[in-house]
Image (tube, rainbow, N blue to C red; front, side, top):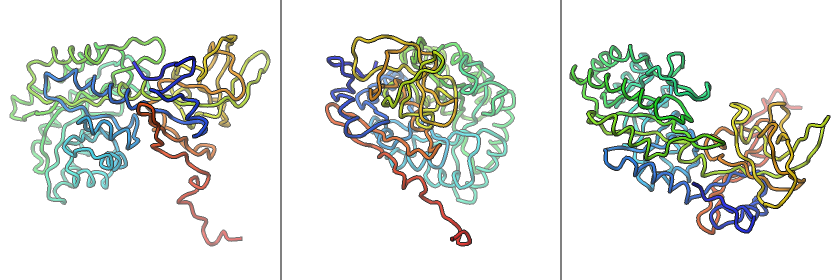
Length: 419
């Protein structure tokens, strides 16, 4: 459920017509519903009300500080994968005690930043990283909270590019080797072993992969406790999918029931890292038709948003529903929706049955709140789009549209190149 609905055939976000924003803000732009964001977070959080838990929003899905602030105000924490995301989270006001730091390639300066901040724990992904964190904690005179990210070798049945829990993936430590790694960590004086972590993939639409992974983690936790290693947190990651097209993912309450039932004998505080399931359907990309054309019987709708704005269709072949901002009776055609980028891979939809959009018309690319702006770029020297948040009957620019002057900010021409 989201708050993008037609009111008298005009698409609105909450109580604000999308065309009103487009007139003032220009296109393309990302548009988010505050009401939807808050409701989605509350639904996920309340689903686990009967067990100790922390909902750590996955910053990579949408890193705008205003969006993060919404979840912080709801009592949420964050899951992050870089020093830049830690900087954003702190700007948003997150409690350091609700921060988990994942990612396979943490730099020394990023580790130091997190240690000085006093985060809850690092999700450690290799033996060398374990040693590095211990060394940096010793130098800084602190103890680092850690958990090992365990790779359970479970098939999440999702796109290969967003699968993270198989043996061949780069993430985590193989579950067979993790017991040895925990024993090693227990001998490092500047580490505080707090938990076990796992993340099997993104856009997972079945419960069975989560339950299979949990069963393997339970065995590990019970063995660790037998050896005197007290595991206090179980981080089950994120990955719960949403509906883009015909997917039927489980509702968060169904997911929670399955997890709680499968983990009754584990006395841990659960950590969850939802991203897409919170923000995916809470945001859209609004774009305008520049031109329409036909080549050898193939039809193209050329819009002012490209793969630099929304790369998911080009990168993953992902489906995003596309609909008119102003709805009316019209012919249906089969067409590609393409952008202005100088790449054949620059498309938002291919061979899609769509309304016969006209030049100048506004289109809404739905379910773009996750991995939309956060994966956008300046390719072809295109300024990045603004981000706009609606609350009730008012809208707010939460990230300004970049200008051409922003494009070369930080660049310098060496003196010897002077004319």
